[in-house]
Image 1 (tube, rainbow, N blue to C red):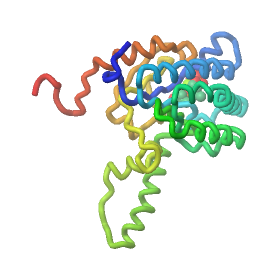
Image 2 (image 1 turned 90 degrees about the vertical axis):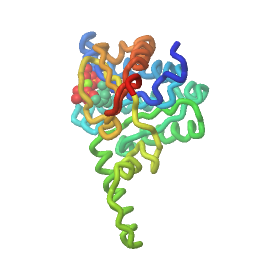
Image 3 (image 1 turned 120 degrees about the vertical axis):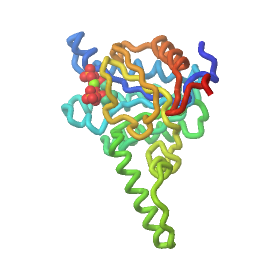
Image 4 (image 1 turned 135 degrees about the vertical axis):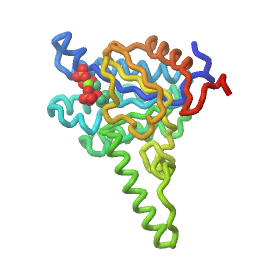
Length: 247
Ligand code: IPE
Ligand code: IPE
Ligand code: MG
């Protein structure tokens, strides 16, 4: 077990490989997503037990609408199923849920189920479990810039002309202090052997440590998760500065 002081404050996970997992078993893609949900359940509890404060999972991207209606609807149905079946355990573990992304574009019943879930975990002070749903990093930045544009117009009316700062853009992201106030991820894990970001936390990942595994998401276990977090604790994060040792 890694000491609580050494675990990353925020871990992001790109849960990839459900389709290939299903294909290898000659099952429909939705069966892969179902198996992927089982993995997600275990990782949430593992992260909570390890004392990680923030976990953000990439569940559906703004680009995933390009898939067949059957697959897209299947994914949304599974999310609702997960919400309904896991609620009690999440509350028991003090898990607090946030949704980042334009999830109100999902089918109405999914939106309602998600709203219920979010409302019932409100105030829980354990793990912040952030689900990226209909999320795109670029769309998020555009949304922030537009919110900022409105705020600046108001400032101008009051005779203030301050240039835009990095902090301003951060504030209006879904993760920003104007919304959920989630810190930047320390570690981002992607499964399935693909080594790219696919529009995940584009702004926030500027200094994240990246880790990849060939394991397909439905085969990913709490043991591998813990092993990756352990490896993270040995990374030397310099942020453009110098090693801790050579002052
Ligand atoms: C990730 O698995 C889940 C989502 C993108 C919703 P994929 O469905 O992308 O699985 P592969 O990449 O096709 O194997
Ligand atoms: C990224 O996976 C999105 C999620 C895991 C939700 P994709 O499978 O959609 O990404 P690409 O298309 O391989 O880049
Ligand atoms: Mg994929």
